[in-house]
Each structure stands twice: as structure tokens, then as C-alpha cells.
Image 1 (cartoon, rainbow, N blue to C red):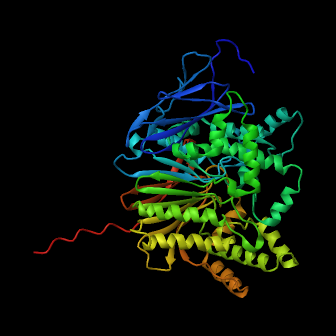
Image 2 (image 1 turned 90 degrees about the horizontal axis):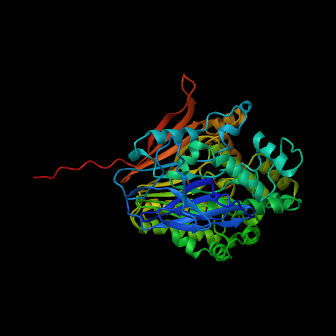
Image 3 (image 1 turned 135 degrees about the vertical axis):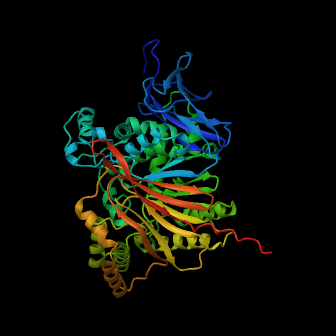
Length: 568
């Protein structure tokens, strides 16, 4: 491919500020051609995937607790770097890298499920205002000291199986044939349209350029019900379209999301990334990445999508609860035993390092509304006991139709995560953190729940769920979740579980807040050993402008004991 002489390279997507620690950061971009990308004097050459060019710039040598505005410059053919970010006409504050270590509270924003961008969604769909858009505008209007320090996106950053009319129109041109209303993306190239549609949204583009983001996938980034069960997998792998879909989905996820989840040290040790860097300049990395994706789908142990974020007194262990599942009906696991051992090791290491707050990120909630938890346990038990017979097939049909595939539907893994969290909260590995918090999305409502039994915990264990950022829960779904939290539904489904001889969960929990519906974004405010969960829901002001309304401010940690005056 050739480009006009003297024509400067352009920034197509990004910049996204991704991994940030006290002394380093990574910045991800997509450009329109091969070039060198410069951020704060650190440079990276683009790499090619299909007809697209990407770069990940590693910025090292930063100061802990510092704030550093940055620009993105692109150069090609020996020309001087041309500034492409920030844009000249931008109404937003300059993008900047803010490293951990500043005084004051650590603020973390989180949520999941963002269906495209408001500008590409038909008004007739009736989706409420985009909470991430409104949150970005809110952040831009705040003093810098009140900005979040991190953004955690817990799945469904794009929807491969629910397309906007704008994307369907793009597909019609791309494929050279009309596409139906229920069209889905087919391959990696079509996935690039989804990321462009979502991340070019001006407010979100600025937010992602200045607040470091941590991401993980959920089912809609591939297809609804992805890896629900062995039966589901047999059905989908028998089709003539799935191989290209999952390969394209995993390649695009690796490029757009996974690379930025890794620290500089992890990038240096990552065999796939190092193989991409070793390719001769201009060589297409797609064949190499397709091999990685095919292996990852067939044998999940070949790629670990889970990772860790270090934030001083807080530690995030992000768990892949989709791609790494063990689906054999007689040995179902949310992740395999080796990866779970790695997760437990990371939790123990966090305690050994003296963190005040341990965060476990997983796209799917660990603690659900009680009635739904019981239904998932009953369904799994029937499917396992009667595998291959009519009762087992009926349980499988219900599992797929009702999306019964959260942690409760993987009972062994639910209990293993419970045991790991309880050991941390009891102080079995050292001083217990003040909180152990499971952050999740997926279920299109927000709530907080806390473990209340067994007792003897020094730290407090919570489930915090926030979803969606930009989507909607149909009225029947809202009714179902309200019923799922009700006492009478809990008693009824618990009785059904006992009658079915289903082992109860190893912990008991109580709802602390919710359910809340609408598009929403959550915030954790961590200061010392104190923690609060703040929830904002999108709305319209009387003048029609979109805004966020705070609906919750929930303390999560025990109050600091008052100082006892000395006697004498």
C-alpha cells in the first residue's frame, strides 16, 4: 500500500491510556498507515493486523504521584512528528498520565455492558442516556483532584450479536449485499467497525485517553451464551460460521483490549507480543494472531486472559470468567484448576503486600439475587445428574434460554472463590484487608450484597454489581430481578433446592442496596482502610440535557475506631 508523498499519517482511534503504575504507563493507538508513534519522547513502531495499523507505546521513567500532560505525535518517512492529539478544537482538558501515589482518596469507576455509542443508536430503541458519556462530561467539569484514578470495564465493551442500524448499513457496503436486521459480525475486520463505533464517541474518547482503563470480555463480545455449557459448545462448533467468528473475536480482543491490560514487565514476557514485535517491518501479524486465537479457543490454558492491577493500597485481580471455562458436565469449572491456583496465589500475595482493599473483577456476579442463585444451582444439579437423559436435556434447554451460567451455575468454582475470599477476610494469610470486593456487571441492574455468614471475619466481603453503562433491561427482566431479591421468592426457591437435594452455597449474604435500574456507573472511593460505593444513574435535566444522578453512597468498611484517651 502506498500513500501520497508528503501526506501525514492520521490517528484513527485512541489514544487509550491503559496500564498505569507508579513509574510507567502504556498508550494504545490505531493509525491509518505504518508510522512511528511518539508519546512524551518514547516511541513505538506500528504493527499491522489485516489492513489496520496499531501501536502500543510504553512510557517509563515517570514519577510516583505525578501528573504529566501528554501529546501523541506521528511521523513517517523520516518526517518530523506531527501532533495528532489532543485535537486543536477539543473542548476537553488536556489528556494526562496520573500515576498512583498522590495524597487523598483513590477513586475507581466501574461498570459493564455498553451498546455502541448514543449517536449510532436509533431513538426508537428507547435506550436511556449513555452513563459513560455523561460520566466523562462530569469528570471533565471536575477539578483534577476529584477525577477517578482508574476505570474498570467489566465486559461487553462491544456487541457482536446486536448491531446498530449504522453498522448494518456499513456491513451492507462492506459485504456488497443487504444484511438482515438480526445480522451479526462475521470476522476480525467487521469487529474493527464495532470498536470504532464505540470508541470514537467524543466524550468517551477523551475519558479513555486520560483515565487508565482495565478491561475484560463477556459473552456479547463473541455471542450471547458464549461457553454456557458443553452442549452449547457442541452445537455452535458444528456450524459453518463459528470458527471464523471466534477467531476474529479473540484476535480483535487481543489487539484492542488485552494488550493494554498488561504491564511493561508482562509485555516483555508475553510470547505472542514478542513474536509480533519480531516480525519484519510491515509483515502482517494476523496469521500469527489467528494461530494464537485458534489455540486459545480449543485449549484455554494456552492464553491467560486474567491479570492483576497494582494500585498501592488496592489490588485488582481480574478473572476471565468466559474463555477459560471447563465445560465437561461432570467437572464444570469457571476456570481450570491451574488458573484458579494462580488467582489464589495473587490474592495471597496481595495480603502479603499489605493491601487495604482486595478487588476481584469478574464480568459475572458471584453473589446473585437469592432466588436466581437457587435456580441456577438446581438447574446445574439436574443437568449433571441426568446428563444425556430427558431431564438433563430439559435442564440444558432452560440453562440456555434463561442464561443460567453465572458463578452459582458452576457450584464448585463458587465455593472455591468463597473459600479464597473468606481466608483473606479472616486474616489467614496475614493482616486482613479492610474489604474484599467482587466487582461485576452483566445482569442489567446494580446492587450491593455482603457476606453475613460464616462469621469471624476481620475484613468485610461485598459483591458490587453495576450494569449497564448503555443498554436497557426490558420490563419483564426488571420484574424478574425484583422478584429474585424478594423474601418469599428466596424461601420458595430454597425449598425447591432442598427438595432437589442440592447442596446450599457455602456462604450466606444479604442485600445491602438495590436493585437500581437504568444506565449507570459505579465508583469506589478508597482512603486508608475506609471504602465507599457510590452509584450514579443517567437521567435528563428539566432542560433536556443529559446528566448523572447520585442514587447511593454506601460505606463498605468498618468505621475507624475512635482514639481512646490515655489513662492517668
